[in-house]
Length: 218
Image (cartoon, rainbow, N blue to C red; front, side, top):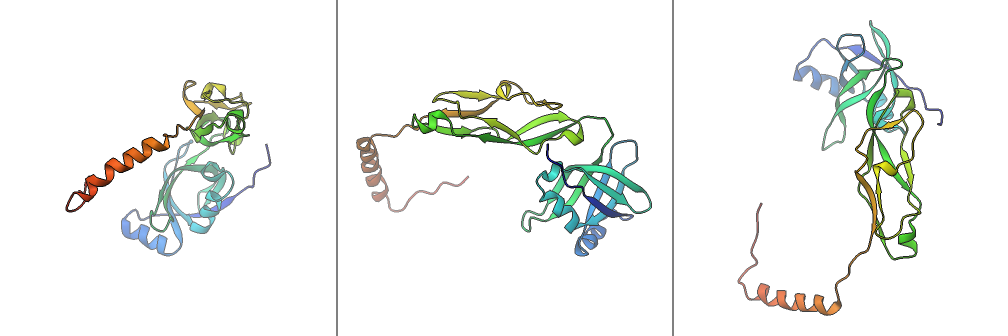
């Protein structure tokens, strides 16, 4: 496993808990935080948006372990547990951080990457369909993989790959159910041109014969 970059974020303790206080912090380029777990009490703090955004943009993203140094309290290792993102500006608005306890395993999700091109695609005109794009795992924080890569080059048309087919990873337990389908190779059924022409011809008079198209509202 490649050496991961170490991050340290300096934060200040937050006294106010109202919306006005949070709005003021965001206007100043800070993000309201709640830190919990481990052996300490829950702490309200604030940290620079630019530092937290850099962590979320890193290769390990929200699974990144970093040091949070809260003024007047001290430093502890944490990771993101919950995030609130502004849907318009795509900006981090609030985050819950979990303290990590040395030697204690945690549950996280990591990306699932399919590696290789299946035989069913290259030789049998099939189409690869990835059903699952994230996998749940349980491991110690320092053992969290950036992703789980699965070779699918051996798959033929109509083959199905399940969670149980993912090779074992040292010090990492997969928590998703073994029977979950993660990928398949299928055949795209194309309708004959004659059938398409018949359908198009049948549909056209129906639209033309009406004064205006019907609108369906959900």
